[in-house]
Image (cartoon, rainbow, N blue to C red; front, side, top):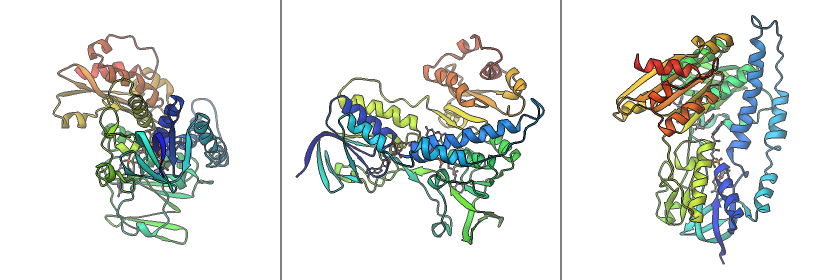
Length: 453
Ligand SMILES: Cc1cc2nc3c(=O)[nH]c(=O)nc-3n(C[C@H](O)[C@H](O)[C@H](O)COP(=O)(O)OP(=O)(O)OC[C@H]3O[C@@H](n4cnc5c(N)ncnc54)[C@H](O)[C@@H]3O)c2cc1C
Ligand SMILES: NC(=O)c1ccc[n+]([C@@H]2O[C@H](COP(=O)([O-])OP(=O)(O)OC[C@H]3O[C@@H](n4cnc5c(N)ncnc54)[C@H](O)[C@@H]3O)[C@@H](O)[C@H]2O)c1
């Protein structure tokens, strides 16, 4: 016998939790189903604990920059407080009771289990069957994508989960993949003394971003002692004793105590029963329209939709889905000004289109670049001042299509650029605005001037 409800939310990660709480608050009868921990990847194995590691690593790096600027420093790194913060403050020892209580406190009905659709409005979870009057929200996130490297399936590699839960930094670490996960964790561990090698298949780090950002970051990481192998293919991996051996095309062999596989994430629709509502279970992501509808009475959001695997995307889409489920009007999803920040030091912030992506769309673009160390603030900052600002202008319309801001506060500087892209502020107006002196964001003025040079 099916239990009637208004809405079933499958997957209570950042996106699903937000939808479930908001709909319960609005007075709907909501069933929230979560297979693991309410809150999902971000608070337990990703953004929050990851940024705690990064914050700690950045403190060490800043202290090491004291000589030549403010005296002498001797830095003794200790990972124990980081591991303790992650256990106690971020994850509550990987216990989600607080989050479950928050949802049930708002009137939600919580089910721990793996759910699947069995037909329109029908969901099976933990031996129970639910019939949802308004519909079902799918928010099941993504999982690490493991590449077909010979031997990889037979070795005890880490994903972000084991890396985040580490109690000690490994003596040495091989990182496969120089994307956001790879570079953030590589730098954080290296600052605690881990000997790190990063292997990236594409020509540069963060290959989805501007090449200038990847090149700059590779220089910084190499200076910090990290071995960066870009344009390198892993040909095989072995593990014996406590050593991983990663062979690259060309026969170079890298060794490490642990191997972190950070080669991307992908959604898995195959176990969700989406075929029962007429959707393709083998699609790479769940196709949704601009109000997050995947089918009649089915909404989808977050990593599952393949529109950018970021917490802020999941939250943004969650708000749209909430409005649509409640029948409230609101603007369509708009990803033109999607911001991304990789929290390395320097931070790599970007918004909108890269130059390459804009040209691929056949747009006539103009670019402008400014080097952060040549700006007043960058020069004052001295050690740790690496950075670049790059603007991509639609030369026909005179508005920014995208921008990149690498620097000590690259993610914060990005905000102004994101507003400019989002609101399509004419470049001519940006050029005649007053930029605070001497801020990092003032380098934008030089990048704007470079657009016409
Ligand atoms: C190391 C790392 C660092 C990151 N750092 C950042 C960052 O700094 N900023 C940022 O914006 N993003 C960051 N991200 C990305 C961010 O974590 C994700 O984009 C975000 O968690 C996606 O939210 P979601 O709700 O779509 O999915 P998830 O958080 O993955 O939640 C999905 C939930 O669904 C559950 N589930 C799956 N299938 C079922 C089922 N059949 N039944 C019931 N439950 C199910 C899962 O157990 C999971 O809890 C990072 C990712 C990683 C890996
Ligand atoms: N600060 C943040 O917002 C943040 C931080 C971490 C992760 N994330 C999100 O999580 C997602 C997943 O992160 P990710 O770093 O795993 O994925 P990613 O797609 O960002 O990067 C994966 C990298 O691995 C490389 N790669 C793939 N196969 C390879 C192989 N066989 N050998 C060597 N390199 C290979 C790719 O070229 C790519 O550069 C990101 O796309 C991002 O959306 C966000």
